Image (cartoon, rainbow, N blue to C red):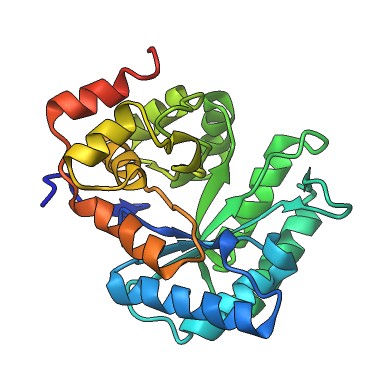
Length: 277
């Protein structure tokens, strides 16, 4: 059993298990695929996942609708976070941060998720064409109206995080981060210093290899490389909240089991040294 704390309080009042589920890989392309995705979402809650991350852009809202079909009425303690401000109108991702658009998307997410208030609503991407203060101000207004409980940001710098916090409380940051991609190290350190949840997206994929130090540690611990990569993240910082995504129930269960994996100081330090400070 790992000695790493497995619970994190988002915003101080939303206790969640520190291994969540990223729902982007759950699809609704066919009835069979949708049924399998619903089964995976339900299994996640059965094994103890209490934080699920989605977005209005995932299949144009179908991902949110699928989660509501699978899990509503939501059990006590389950937090479903969503995001707005990123779209794929022509196949390529485009940030859309106009206040009226963010408000529209938040209203649609409320409807699709079948809730009166979204526990965590995140700005999916900062739109460089819209004043940053206006984007954050739109989220603050939604919060003041009681339509969202907490505000989060995604793929931001320390300077942007500091600026946003001058306008409204920010309880989470969702940046790309994993064992071998630590470009957001300064953001993570800022989050840890201020008690802000850090939600790394893409927490596993680039880290998993069939050989090398990660595979060696995994073999020694009778674990998968993915489990070791997640265990390293959990030990890296107490504000870390990985959201590995999968459409496979088996991988879901394997990923969640990483919370109980104990890394020795030697193993942790050896993996940590894979990327120079």
